[in-house]
Length: 254
Ligand SMILES: NC(=O)C1=CN([C@@H]2O[C@H](COP(=O)(O)OP(=O)(O)OC[C@H]3O[C@@H](n4cnc5c(N)ncnc54)[C@H](O)[C@@H]3O)[C@@H](O)[C@H]2O)C=CC1
Ligand SMILES: O=C(O)C1=N[C@H](C(=O)O)C[C@H](O)C1
Image 1 (spheres, rainbow, N blue to C red):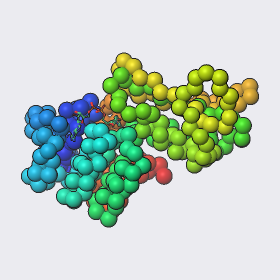
Image 2 (cartoon, rainbow, N blue to C red):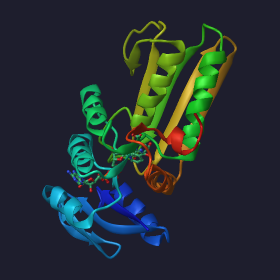
Image 3 (cartoon, rainbow, N blue to C red):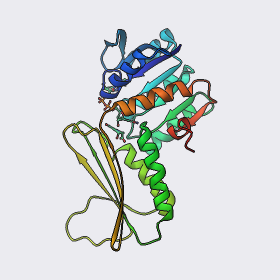
Image 4 (cartoon, helix red, strand yellow):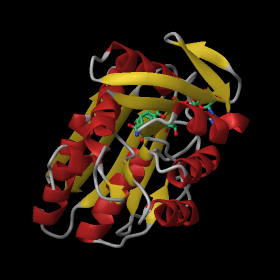
């Protein structure tokens, strides 16, 4: 049995992941960590300040982290120091935090880190790369994302990954976040963020040329798509060489 612990256990994603792990016959949910102590799916949730002692006591094989960027960096460092493999879904990291994470992980533990664990989005990213690579010059590009009212980071991690892919294929170009007033289009990529209600996660990329528009989009209807991908990654990451992996590695897409 693979021993799994969840950081952010009482959050939207932590709850969805905890349920899947507790229902799995191959995985053993050993506990959770959150800002306040509690319980989920019959196991204790300890408060964040007790993370080190929790890892020492429960000795998980893998820690799944869906928290918030400022907390996640410390959680990743703690797991790496205890030799615990990682699955990280938290988004909103600064470039400096990403580097801190890389240094904490490389040479120490295997870690799957992805801004989106859904199978559909991982295929969507490959389609965006393909379209950006094949379309001739002259197509204007706009990226749109929409999420629920409680999402803290913007643009979404998935949208940032889309921008990285576009920069690799057609750029780098300026990323222009919204437009207002007298604007003249240049070769920037427009980025548009919508927040409202309980939208689970929508992303779209528009390639607009003369007399035609190519639009690629993905819509998540339930957090189960992210949770099942994260749980799949948790089973996959055990026994891998130390280093940073993506969901494309888990899905064998690269
Ligand atoms: N990669 C992916 O596929 C997905 C990523 N996400 C990302 O996951 C993160 C969490 O999203 P939600 O679950 O919707 O947020 P949420 O706000 O519902 O849950 C986050 C939880 O983390 C807890 N937390 C904060 N600091 C902590 C610490 N130091 N230690 C342990 N727990 C701590 C909070 O109390 C909260 O319960 C966000 O960054 C979001 O963008 C969300 C969905 C899918
Ligand atoms: O916060 C969310 O909800 C989501 N966050 C991820 C992101 O920032 O891309 C993935 C998904 O879109 C849901």
